[in-house]
Length: 199
Image (cartoon, rainbow, N blue to C red; front, side):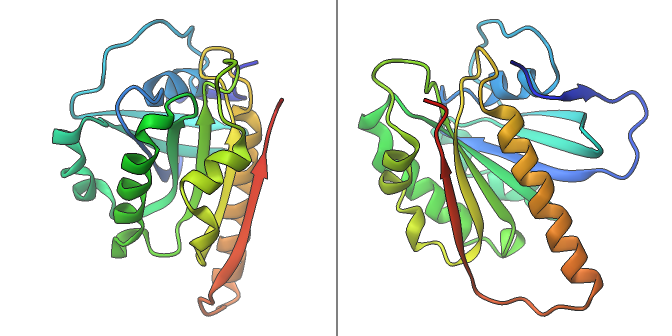
């Protein structure tokens, strides 16, 4: 099942969302599922893709940033005003777990992403060699994250499995954050995470 999202013709107020991850993790295929476009084999993104997408009742400006090593140093240029970000992890590629973990740690240090909710997509979960969401959380050391809400969702970019659940979590988290902001709540340390498998 694809995500309950669609490309926008006339965007309203948009929430800026980053889609990050190593090359070949499936970021652009995830974006295609969010647009409800048939997923076809795609080359690694050079630079970025930008799409305006309506997911249920929220509008997003989704930035899909290239994940090759030469592109990652440029990620931070795009972080300002980000409301949520997705980190796509290839759950079949155990050999790059350390590389992915270190990249995520560097991203989390950026002041422009301070407190921004994190959704980790454990992609390719439909393959037999895939790690579970719990294993992915352990590999990325997500339990050490205490300054924002985070969640891990098993997904398949080819079938759309898990993407609706991920978007629903992001939507609820953004709504909660904006509600607290309107009340004038001060930022507090957040010790909250969730792990979700579809298997």
